[in-house]
Image (cartoon, rainbow, N blue to C red):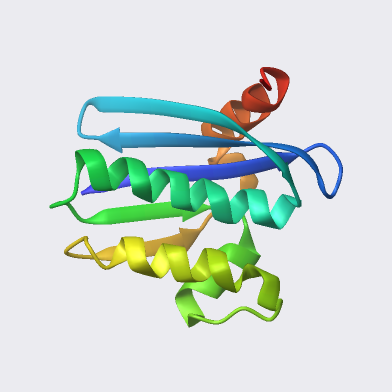
Length: 130
């Protein structure tokens, strides 16, 4: 099973945004960060999950994916397959299409304090924006 931690960070709402992804697979640990442009904080959180799933599709397509996020709006949207704010529907659709390739995918909400590594990476992506 692959453990995936995601976080998005925005300076402003909308504003410059970055994503952080921390992946644990046995003893292997992988960190990804990326500046993504101008987004709201919620959009950055959705995009972080998308980027993580795209990475997992390339490297772990036959594995069970356990995703963790401190973004309740994202976790609830994925769990319920429903978004109140219809502007997030495009992100949910993309997530659904990506999760279909894995044998099993689940997402869990975690408190911010349990998501420190992904948070640090997302903030670092903001500082290194290019």
